Image (cartoon, rainbow, N blue to C red; front, side):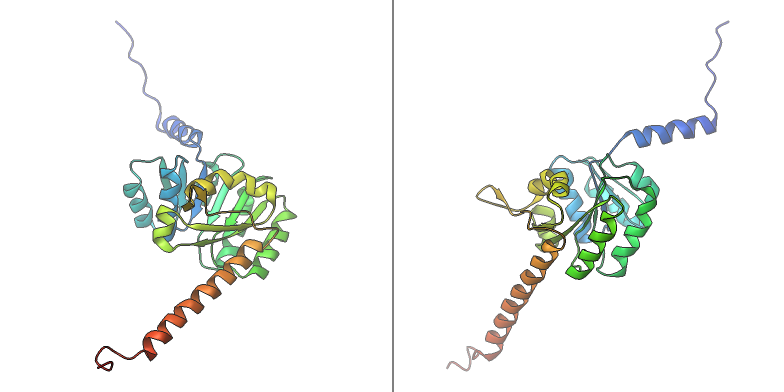
Amino acid sequence: PPRSTPKPSSAASDVYKRQKKYSMKFDFGLVGLGVMGRNLILNVAENGYSSLGLSSKIDSINLLKEEGKNYKVDGTQSDEDFINRLSSPRIIMLLVPAGKPVDSMIDRFLPYLHDGDLIIDGGNSHYDDTDRRYNYLRKKSINFIGAGVSGGSKGARYGPSIMPGGDKDAYEIVRPIFESVAAKIKDEPCVSFLGNTSSGHYVKMIHNGIEYGIMQLISCLLYTSPSPRDRG
């Protein structure tokens, strides 16, 4: 009688699943799956770049998978899993609060990174912190870009303005993705390399100052203008 094919052991099956999982590499990784991060990663995926998110919250990952079910997008809670599933050189964008959270994520990733990988800080970091991180990672042969991102959650989903600074060669790694997802004016993407080290975050600081100044002016005009009733 014909012999039945033996079933693989549970351990062998787990190894196969792990190998298959890591053979599927993603083009872009993003940390922080709040509204802004989730919308940006969906924008990247919709433009044809496979995208992987990292979050400590399983609900955020499930929401990303649900909203991104028509794209090549996935999420994980594991740092090591996140790094191993990205294609080289790895492109990792951080959308976490400025300050210690950025330093914490960099330190968590360093044991898994290779020479030439790229970390992008997309938050509102102070430019002095960006200079410090740039120099720290350069000594470890890791690329670092500080990139201001403007447009809010809606802009993240449908086209933000992006202000990157760092090394020009490092920017070339992510330039196709940034130019694809950025807002367009007369078919020109609203993103351009702004200069070395912290130039991008410095420009974003100036951008925010102008924006907040205009908002303050509008509020002052509304406050001091007579109401329709007072106009008689």
